[in-house]
Length: 275
Image 1 (cartoon, rainbow, N blue to C red):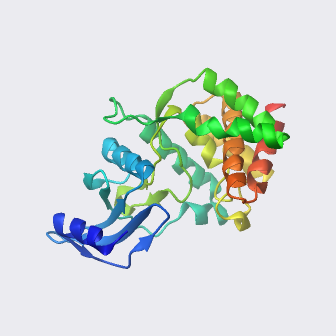
Image 2: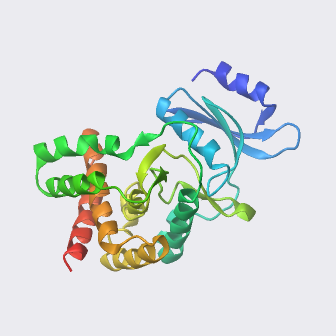
Image 3: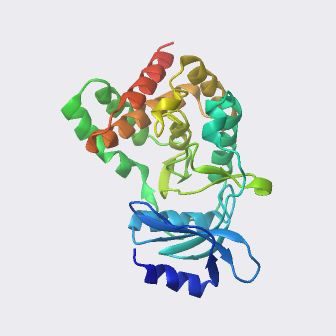
C-alpha cells in the first residue's frame, strides 16, 4: 500500500498519525488521532475484498459488541482504538481462563443479537467449509471424521446469524471504560455455534507455547461455560468444535503449517461426544 493512499484518508478524515504504521498481508494500519478533538483511533486501509466485507460488518454492528466505527468508506475504516491494558490471551495463560472465556461468550452473544438485515451480502458459512472435504479425501484419518460432522451441521443449520468468523482471544480487545469489544470480523452468515467453537482452539492456535486450550480440564471447564452462556446444546457445540478443528487444520495444511493444536482439540471434543 503506497503512502499516498494513507495520506488521502488522513486528509479526508482530518487525522494526525499517532504511532508507526504496521502492515499485514491484506491491510495497512496506522494509529491516529482526530484533529478536531484528539480521539485516539486506528485507521485501516485495505484493497482486499474479504477485509472490506469485514469493514462493512463493523459498520453494520454500530458498536454493538464491536469496536465503535468513527468513519467508514469501503476500503478504509476508522475505529476507536483499544486503550485498555488487559489481554484475554494473557488472562488465559495466567490462570484466568474462565473469566476470559466468559468475556468471549458475552461478546459473541452481543454480536449475534444485532437485529436487522445486513446492507451487504456476507459469505455463507458452507462456502468456507468447501476445502475440508477434499482435504479429508486426501489425508483421511480424523479429518474425514471432521468433514462428515461438518456436512451434517451445514445441511441442517440452526440459529443462523451474522457471524464474526474469527472470534478468538486476540480479536476481542480491552477498550477500557467501553469494555471488551471485537475487531477484525470476516463477514460470514451461518449457525452461531461456529463462533463459539473458535474459542476452544485459542490462544494455543496462534501461540502453541501457551498450552492452555489443550489441557483436558480446561477444555471441560470451557465446555460448561460456553454451554451455559450461549445456550447451545452441548452435543451440537462439540460437533461444531470438531468441524472447526477440521477446517482450521485444512487451512494449516494448505500453508504447510503444523496441525497439532487442532488435532488435539478435536480429539478432546470427540472423547466428550462419546461420553
